[in-house]
Image 1 (cartoon, rainbow over the protein chains, first blue to last red):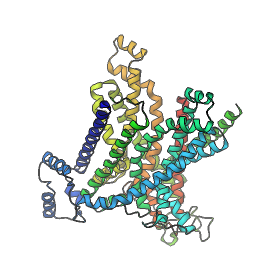
Image 2 (image 1 turned 180 degrees about the vertical axis):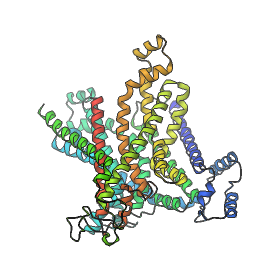
Image 3 (image 1 turned 45 degrees about the horizontal axis):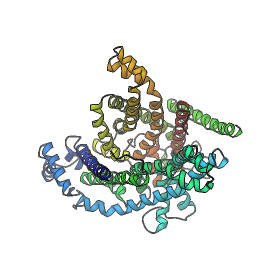
Image 4 (image 1 turned 60 degrees about the vertical axis):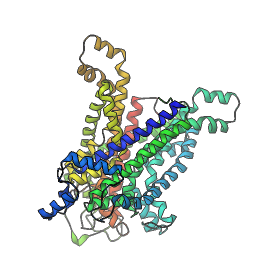
Length: 308
Length: 281
């Protein structure tokens, strides 16, 4: 029990360390050119305007002092003000976050709903026509860029058939196309992973033993095989959250979905770097948090793990 | 046996598709100026938004139609091949070099290991496209910057895999033997260990080319990749999206090209992986 607690504590501390690293990287990226003020202001800004903004953002101070202030503010959840909206960047991003999380979680659910049955059936019927069909879809699904899937879906379902809206947020009908476009890649990935992991488990000794004991085939698969073959799936889902959040930037632009991704692109075009900075730290933070949860979930789903 | 044979046939079909497609793409990229019927940037404002030749209202001479500025889609798609292959290959060379180097050092020297793997964890916390986006936004666009950014953001996977390979190989008999007869660290790493871990490097690099082509087109699609003066598939899709309801051909053809080249590379990657590791499924 003690080792379990210290495992959890260590994972949490490590997550904080990674977040700290993320913030540091973001800080130095925005200062990479030497003079961030020059990229924040339009090219025709006067020297006085530049000097004014520099003082306002504290960029007249030495770099290390700036970094110290940045980290100190971060610890107080003060991530600066947006240049465009004159408002707290954290507040602006948090307002947009629910839309992004809604999109990403719906994609995840769609991906799991399709890929888990497809992966299981494919593994059980290995080599069959169904299996080969699924594996071909997997290959193709992994090769579609997310934004092109989005454009094709709009072309087919919105422009040609007029069934679903081309973009924007609203009822569930607004969610279907973007969530599917965003989830397609993950769908393919999980199907493939679950299939190969289940095939491996099914040929292992303890499955043969379970079968030899006379357990029903269904019971063997559901209780013995599936549980173990889902482990790598959980890991990949955690790691793929990053891809999902990154993909949401593109998806939101295609479907005019008012989430964080759309805000990031707009902020970049408006040279609103404090906003970009906060958005990236926050999205990376979500990724770290979810992987922390996955790590802790392992304690529950895989009792073999040694906590050291 | 019968089942296996059938599976082999369809596998072969895929592999042939992959090889033929890739050879075709390379030929198109190299000989683009000879193949393209038009200058990819030549505008013909009298022939704007013309559909492909088989559709009603097409303009003769423009096989796949024209875009909003009357530029030939076919020629732009042909020239776009160059950008995708160029960015894909160069970025992968950069990532691979950094990643393999760090992986070798991390696996071999323990002091280096802890630090580098922490850095890898931090880098992994960023969605790749977001990190690339931020750096491009700060540094400014341009083809060179894009290649560098995609190159330096892709090293982690190489480093992790190479590290674990080195870790397990470090204690193998032939390395210990070479070390015993006095081989230097550099010699051990580059002459004995590296040649033995080329298989995973080549496998990762193959899939990485495909991922980089998608990343490049995504960034260009967002307007933060290849400058719009250069015809690239991502740029074409970015413009095409604005005309999605009136000119589907602007979006269809560049997307098809991305899909085919990525699909072909992924199939090649599977083939290489299975070839190197017959137990992989």
